[in-house]
Image 1: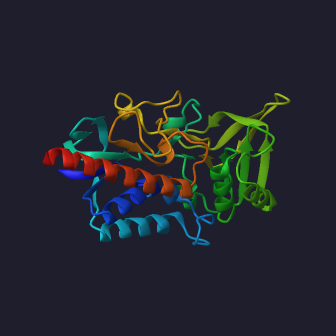
Image 2 (image 1 turned 90 degrees about the horizontal axis):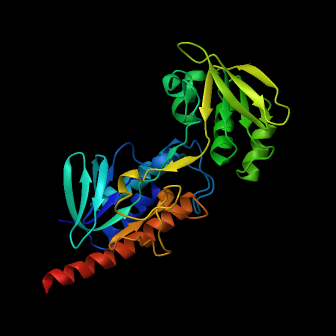
Length: 307
């Protein structure tokens, strides 16, 4: 039996794994996609204390290397459920895995716009990761949808390799970091379409443009772009655990400041947990707090078994 199973290999999950392993616990991390979570696709991280600048991919690789050096095991498999109890069971596509405590760090997924043909055009002009797919549009015209830090970072990254970038946001002010907004707006090949929304995707079988509607005037126009990168927020990847732990109306895990959930022995960390701020620093902090709480729970479980 594993002492602690961590669901998710993002910053929160790997931080939890590192802390638990250093506390002498056996740790298994389950990851269904790629190590690092969303930060792995960030071209440049500049707000993590002690590291002035680093790519998200390198940051993720360092976390994994540190965890594995401590004996943490990583299994690429999707967790499909969770059965709390005196002996925990994490359900996966490969069967059940038993443990004494669980750290749920499942993260969040990119939110789609919900436009007709959006799924059909995914990978054919519509993308959700500028770092992953931006190189395919080198020297071409692209657009980014969103007003948060992720959208601003995407626009800045794409501006360095694309001919032009149109940044589309439905409000007249960005909600992302002010420094990022100022930097993106100052780039000569970035054009802003504020108070505007994308209403249609054009092109067959690949994207050739989008229809943009100004919310204030109601006027519509078409933009010729080869790529559209959607950075319109996230949804927590918690549906598989809705019967095991309490979630809020948006699907985020309800957890206290010690990261304890409604299920004894299950702790939540990172972007899947309801909280006001979601940054690398808060993910790492969650991971540390959740891991130490999980270790204490595992110790109590072991004492109970000894009796």
